[in-house]
Length: 87
Image (cartoon, rainbow, N blue to C red; front, side, top):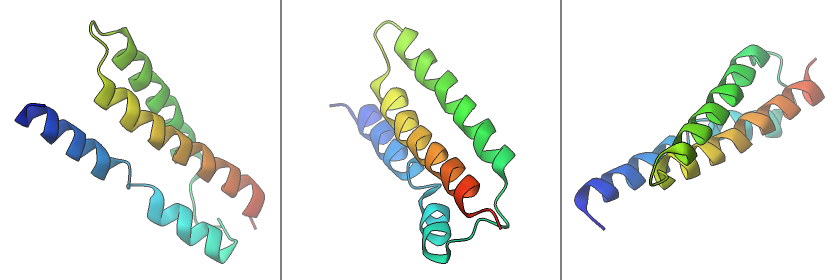
């Protein structure tokens, strides 16, 4: 693994943490009152596009695919929580 690869995987690991604090806060409080549903829908669509792009590259870019797959799961989780706990 090269230094560039290590940097990419490290950046991807940190990026995957972006939505985690909001998910935890929403889960604990059982409230999504101040959470923007539209933002997480846009994020989910964006992640799908990044995953497709990473997969279509030759060779496939696994940093992009893995990072955005995790963020997609988090975006979808927040959408579910927003719909469930929207008060």
